[in-house]
Image 1 (cartoon, rainbow, N blue to C red):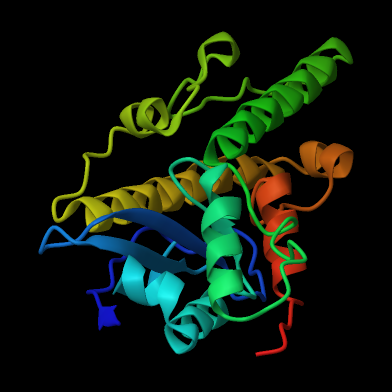
Image 2: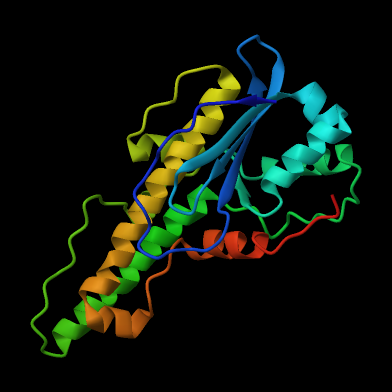
Length: 234
């Protein structure tokens, strides 16, 4: 199991989240062209806190290697470039680790595409509140966003999301490039969400309407909170 350099991704979120955070998984070729699994641990703030590249032969064929990887993700929300692949990868690790396949990860996985959709939906909610305040005769300024994300033209897959973020594809072997690129986009989304939630701190009437700021988009936050309480018999 090889450690890979940590990468700083984003500023601290607006709300502290006392949970381990998230994990990003990827399958692909390593620097030697061999089939490998990459695992990046990401804090709730979007920072890389741990990273490994392991041969697929070891990850899915060695009980001790599989268990070490499971320990690295059991208390974390989990995602990937294709979030539907999370179940397949974790199921294989679970079986290799000798654990019962009870799909313990079902409430752990989340989609970055869905997270961006929640950003756009939350913006629309705040804008509606501002509009309603204006109709009530209050003198309030319109909301200004650094980036526009048209609700009718949102990304349909990770490649489109990465392009929208403006982040380049990370260099390196295929498996490292993929997991690192996903991790960077994840960090970018933390910042985009924090920008939206900052509105609650600046405008009391928005906070009164929508509640206290949240650290992450709802489905992602729920996955982090659920995963933080997971304990597997390892």
